[in-house]
Image: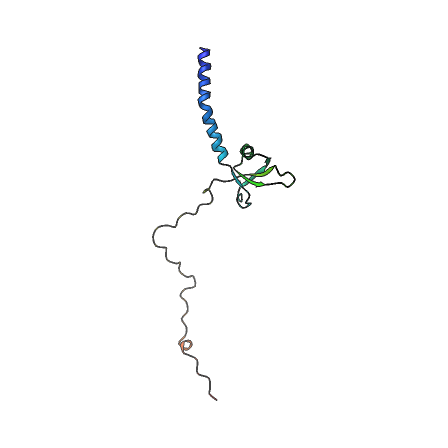
Length: 133
């Protein structure tokens, strides 16, 4: 019976391993690399990682808990890539502005000063012409 169990477990592991590889690829594929410092604005900075392989750099970003990396290339070691690791909110999760209500807008509120004063009849007459010389 133990031999049957061992064979079953081996078969299940063999079937599951391609799925695990697909999951890893999907996770690594979600890591966003950029050299534009405006991209991680509004994201949480986690730390810095360094490697000479993009694939390994992606793994380090995921292991650190990030999903975005701001890349730089240090002058002292041209084979290495530095990455500041960030965790960014999902797209579309920012503050949402609700749509305006349907229908006509409400009328303006009444003025607290009452109606505007009417000009006096004397103020409505044009000024007299200047005296001629």
